[in-house]
Amino acid sequence: MFYFNGKEEITLDSDNIPKHIAIIMDGNGRWAKKRLLPRKAGHKAGADALEGIIDACKKIGVKHLTVYAFSTENWKRSQEEIDGIMDLLRSYVKKYTERAKKDDVKMDAIGDITRLDLDIQESIKNLTEATKDKDTLNLHIALNYGGRDEIRRCVKKICEDVESGKILSSDIDESIISKNLDTSDIPDPELVIRTSGEERISNFLLWQIAYSEFYFSDKLWPDFKEEDLFEAVYKYQNRNRRFGGR
Ligand code: IPE
Ligand code: IPE
Ligand code: MG
View 1 (tube, rainbow, N blue to C red):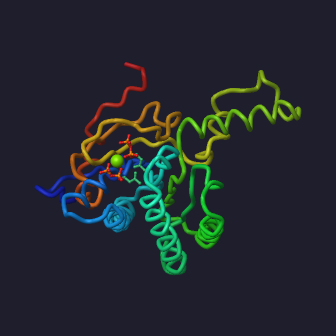
View 2 (spheres, rainbow, N blue to C red):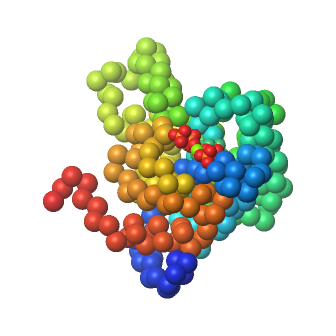
View 3 (cartoon, helix red, strand yellow):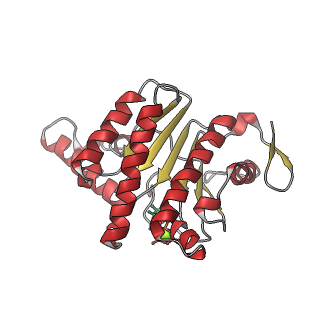
């Protein structure tokens, strides 16, 4: 398969496309600042950029795309910014629900969405229901998501299962932990991408990234295009994954 990476033609090996790509969509605020626009305009441009990346993932056959949209730490931001992000979320969830009939993307949320406004929780449930039979790409949107909070909730669920006698503490193995995370039905991401030049995890998918490959881009998220995704997959395909072996 030949693709353009912004500079030249590259060949992607169709047998080695990551099944799961996870993206930390960072840099919306700086994108807006550079244009003397309010931060909300950056988040809007970021949501638009995501649409292009969804299409790019479909083109190359990625099965799962998880995107970090709002972290458990993002509540520290100004109420004005949080309200702006939640408004955008409302309108995008609505837009995707209306498009659900003709689109082939299955969507759900990971993270503790019970902290979001009730109407947003409802509309996310509707969107999940409306797209549950789609099978081209699974889009998982991380909302009020934090890797540590996810592990905390997972430990709580497992303790409850031990207390109720459903399992014994000696039964607890890695697969029980994986199954009690928000990502229970999703394979671990082979590739994690972060934009905006920051090279950190910021509490994203802590358990699941044990053996992920990382790709850091200096582009701000609203500027991250299809060709950048292809380049990230190209770099991924040229890495040597060893998983602790030789
Ligand atoms: C990422 O962009 C989106 C969210 C965290 C909601 P930022 O808003 O963090 O953008 P910068 O890092 O300030 O540029
Ligand atoms: C991570 O970005 C969270 C999302 C992209 C939603 P942040 O901008 O919140 O992370 P830090 O503050 O740079 O670590
Ligand atoms: Mg940021």
